Length: 104
Image 1: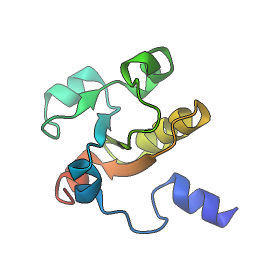
Image 2: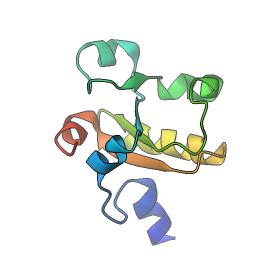
Image 3: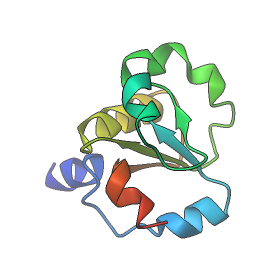
């Protein structure tokens, strides 16, 4: 149970986010459009966590790595759960977009 919670909130094994991006990972920013427009990681896709379930068709390849991010890590954890429960196989919670950009 504790390991599941750690992985859900991004505290699991260390992830090399820059390597995932080199391999073609999608950076999915799940903040609102207004938050996204005030600053984001270059090349990130913006789909708010509230509309993610209705927009899964925008993420066509369920086997392509996806790194979720938001303002603090809470919404990105929810997004990771939505994606994995819909069959996406390589989903990583990158936490806040501000800290994630320094890991790339």
